[in-house]
Length: 380
Image (cartoon, rainbow, N blue to C red):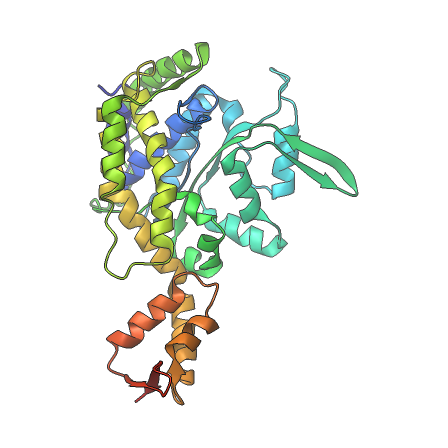
């Protein structure tokens, strides 16, 4: 039975007209941030509960910022030391993480980054021309690392456990991101949450439901105290293990869906385990991960996260696809071979296949076969 998420969902639906899935994502990110270092999935070398999650939607879809702000507020109320800086360069973030906490004397290797406007972070990374994407991948993976600079002291971070929770409009994803962000593994690490059902928009946000907030925080505080007092990993129950194995075989790929999608499924597997851990922590933070918790995680993937990935991928790659199509049209005036198509866009995972599928489905190209038996496509 839910101890925190039930109250959180009730609070969220009364506090804002944001889509319910935004509230679900926000609640999970609260649990994830507070659980860092205190609970993990006890399989292999252990799977930390850290997550990267983006609430996405059109710029006119309201309340992404509101959902992120609520999550930050919840963490700040119980563990303000876990909230990372809002405006930072990667070098600055590393230095901040290495600084000793005045209370514990330890470095800040466990934190949540809450970005109400993640598009600003992307713009800042582009402006500085740094290695934000590569560095964020390293922080997510959680391995020890040392940064050495010629004109400054070296920086060492041990076992970083970092969360990132942000909101971003589709328009900014398309502006600042590209297919390479998938190929390098940056966005492969993210969970995307896009609206499924829009709620009726209100002109004014409702009065803050203080009683529901306090009840949710009371329940969350009790869970957090239990985690801190006795940190350990939760094992998967046999039933949860079987359900997970079966589910991973059933995530649907659409006909012709190549490129990032199959690889994203592989990355999605560990994230499902993390979500199952969080749902279990909400039920019983001291028991094995149950089939009910695993089912909750798989359901969230099915009705929200998987299709949200598809939408984000389409948005991010749309501009490149349109540019590539224009190039193919120019080339096809004199004829372009299928082999040449794949060679020209080599390294752009999934793009050659997508271009070929577009050509085959279009009535604007003639197909012929040359003397070597190669397909040749010519603009009509």
